[in-house]
Length: 94
Image 1 (cartoon, helix red, strand yellow):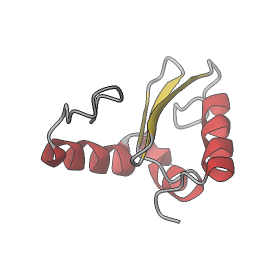
Image 2 (cartoon, helix red, strand yellow):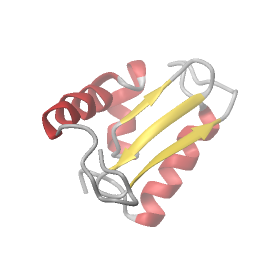
Image 3 (tube, rainbow, N blue to C red):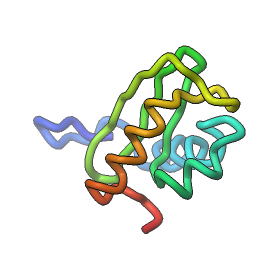
């Protein structure tokens, strides 16, 4: 919710709390629980193959891969986010 250049808060923290909570609980459709355990970042996927994830106090990450799993989430995007979470220590619940 901050402008990276100025540091200005762009989105009220109370709104971010709601949005991030919804992203964790249902942003990855029926795969949200597994995603929270494996990747540990609030995320929202779309059936077009895109996923946007939020790395706490760090950055937003957007990934794309057209092949979808049974839950309608990008297979490649999921794997990339899992890799980044592990390698960069981005897991929110760790």
